[in-house]
Length: 310
Image (cartoon, rainbow, N blue to C red):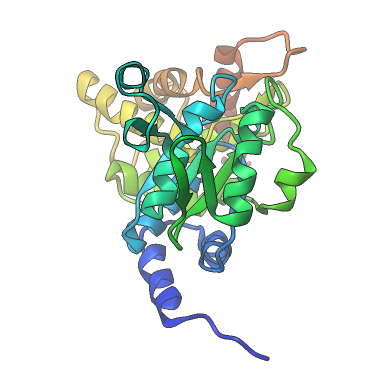
């Protein structure tokens, strides 16, 4: 039997898509999964529009998006909720003095529970989610049973490039989650994002330079994990303010010679915006500043020289 997407999902796709840049396929897949009633894990590096996508979907549906950071301190009680100790001493345990956690709130309100760094949470905490995912209900001792509203979903995210402090997810957890790999957008999409977030013209030299050097951090041999597009946004924003301080206009066409004041200004903006966002390989005998200067030289010295005739 052939089935078709409901008109609500089709209409939502158009409105949600208008809020995103370069994420058409990923939006289709995530929206299809959550509209089908599935929970999903989004696997990809930071700064790849995962939160933006979920924020747009929940805003379109008119439901809350509750954030939880996965770490060793995320206990089952913090996730589910707990009884107020002071009221327990004076009143005994009851449903009225139960303080709901983000999982309970998401189920009651029919919202998305978004757990970032999912694989950093302890096993016993993740196991708490199994019943919520399988049965859409949660039984809490001395507080009763919470039945999830139909729009309740669990959305998880994991960074495949960072294995420090992470745990291996059990087969039971994997079996209850759909999965989507979300990688960096292409250069043109990232330029669109930077232009949108900074207010600069999409074709401005500053936008292209910021995106190019940021993307280069992801390919440098001494870098384990490069910067997301947030680094390009901050590079452009810092460069604009540096230009104002130094009496330089950087929002229009600029010259690209390495001795030009714009090039020197751009290097300073790179160092401020990107040096804390790149993670070097443990075996690399270098510093973030040296790596960024190499990338800057490639952009402002080697590439312009190669482009000259003769």
